[in-house]
Image (cartoon, rainbow, N blue to C red; front, side):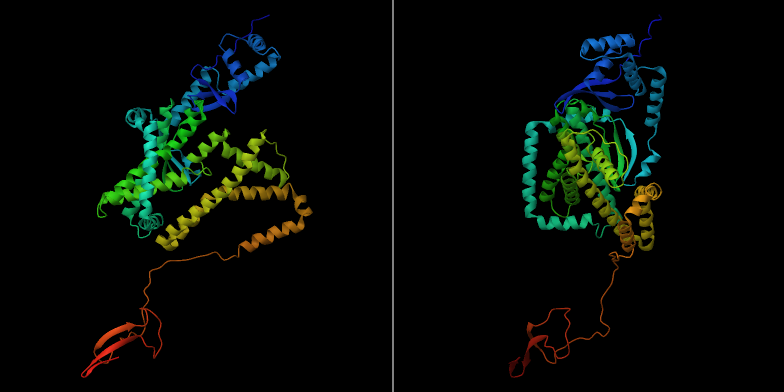
Length: 500
C-alpha cells in the first residue's frame, strides 16, 4: 500500500492569536498577503496546528481523535475540511501564493480604482502604507493617551463648553452662515474644505495612534469623498487581536477624542483673540467643524463611523449593520414576497439587535440621503439655475440607479413568477397602483431665490407746511397708510410761540 501524501503546511506568514468573544475563546487569523481577517473556532484551530507539512490524512485523523476522544473523524471529513482551507488560501502552495502576491502588487500600484465611482456618496482615492508616518508621530503624540492627560482634556472640554454658552448668539449665527454657505465665495468654500480635510486627517491619525498605543499596527490609510465632503479611512483591523473590548472601543473613540482636543484648543483661541485677526476666524471654523463632526456625526451609531464600531464592540456582534440589513431583507422576502429564504442561525440577543438597529439605521440612512440630495440641489440650482438642475437630475439618477434596478427586478419577478399573487389580491394590487400613480401628481415644494428690490411706482415726499419739532411718530417706516392718516405730531414754531 503506497504511503499517504502529506497535506500542505499551514502558511507560516499567517498571524493567529486567541481572543475572548461572547464568553468563548476563538482565534483571530490575519492573512497579511490579502489583509483579510478570519475567525476560527477551537476545532479549526487544532486542525490548522496539525498541518505541519508532514502529516497525511490518517495522521491528522488520529491526532484529532486524541484531542477529542469523544468524536470520530473519518478521513473523508478530514479531506473535506483541509480542502476548504486550501481553497481559502490558508495552505502553502507555490501557485496560489504567487497569484496572491501578484494580486497584492496590482492593488498596491492602483492608486485609483474605477469601481470607486459606483457609489457617488463614497468615492475612494489613493491608499498607502502609513507605518512610517505613525512611527514618526507616535513618540510625540502618545502623551495624549496618558490617563491624567485624558482627564485634563475632558475637564478643559467642559470648560470650553461653558465659555461658549455665554457666546451662544454669535455661535448660532456662525453655524447658520457656515453650514448653509450663505454669502460664501469660492475662497471661503476652499478654506472650508481645507479645514475639513485637516480635521479629518487629525481624526484618522487619532484612530491609528490609539491602535498603535495598544499594540496594533495600522495597515492602510486612504483618501475618499463621503457625501461630497473630504474624508479618510485608517485600517485598524489589528483591533480584532485585542482581547479587551474596552481597548477596541477606545480605538473607535480615539478619532472623536482628537477632534474634541481640536475643538477645545480652537475655542480658547477664538475667545482669546481679537475679532479682526485671521487666526480668530480660522479658530472659529475649526471649533465649529470639529465640534459638529466629532460629537454629532462620528458618535452617531446609525452610520458606519466611530459610534457604530463602539456599539458593535459593545454588543459583541461583528458586521452588525450588514447582518441587520440582510436579516430584515430576508424577512421581507420570506413574509411579503413569499420567496424561499434560508435564515442565518442567530441567537435571541442577535435577533433583537438586528430588528432594532436595522430598522433605525435604515430609516436614518434614507432620511440623511434625502437631506443631502436636497442640500446638493439647493447649491446647484441656486448657483447655476437651469444647468444646475440638469446636473442635479443626472446626479440623482446615477446615485439611485441601484434602487431603481432592484425595484424593476422585483416587479418583474412578481409579474412573471408570482402572477397568481396579484390575481389573489386584486384590491391590494389596484390600491398600490393608484397610490403610485397619484404620487406622480403630488405638487412638490419648490422655491427659487432671486435678488429683488421693492420700489414705489409714484414716489412722493411728505413735507410739513411750517417749521417745527417732531414730538411723536405714529407709524413705522415701510408701513402701508391711506389718505388722511396722521403719521406724526409736529410742534410748529410760530411768531407768537408754539402750536401743535
